[in-house]
Length: 362
Image (cartoon, rainbow, N blue to C red; front, side, top):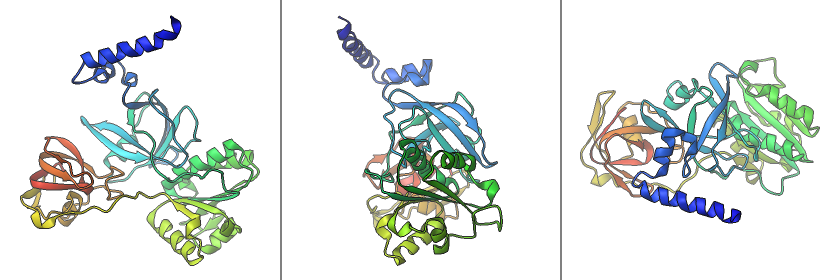
């Protein structure tokens, strides 16, 4: 009888789910406790700290629906701001396989969600997606590994570093991290502790805006890489950071004939097609009071053409950084072809094309 109990319980839950349509049990369970939902992944914040004035680091205990992640992947995090759910992508920076997730977010002066997260408090609940992304360590692990990051781009490669140390990786690992100054260097203490625990793990701190206080100074160069990891040509390199660092590294590795050994965190998607010749209607950006004829371009480009500077990231409908509230009108998702006409609907500007008149709260 005991063995049958879980099946019976599952049957009762399924019956309850059917009886509670159209909203489903989760909509009622979350009124009692958001962490009780079954079909969505939620996480409760259990610890918060500020490493620098413009960053927040917080630990999240995910609900039972969480299936784990591979070091280097990202998740789509949802927070509610003024009654609207906002979604952004962030990389967990702990070792894979742990019970909790750790995130570090740097505040963008124009970033609605990143600024909101600076005030994250213990007990807050966030929504989470399953982990995604191909920026991961291969299996089996390479004998020699260079981990390189800049600024808040440290998070996915820190997850790799923590995972390799937890696994007792026998090969050589160098972690080269760029920050403006020592005061801006995230996870400096944690990286030093990893190096103390693992003899084959070495940390090299590079400061771009200071002449002292680091192991290296100035912008990324082949001289930096040769000093940090003289064997980098025989290694696999994993990089995440600001665009100038990424571009400089790609150019260097291409010139060295090593492009296949450089792995970077970047979003990829199929090309998007837009039929500008069929455009009609007008687009109104309500908060700014700007209005223009619909050019048939994605709303992100139309906003930029109108002189606005909305927050954005991948420009391919993956990172959710450009989400805004559509208050009226219909839009077509250029990735899926789906047309949506709901009022007060959150949309991604970079892949949303107006179908007639549209109003955006921007």
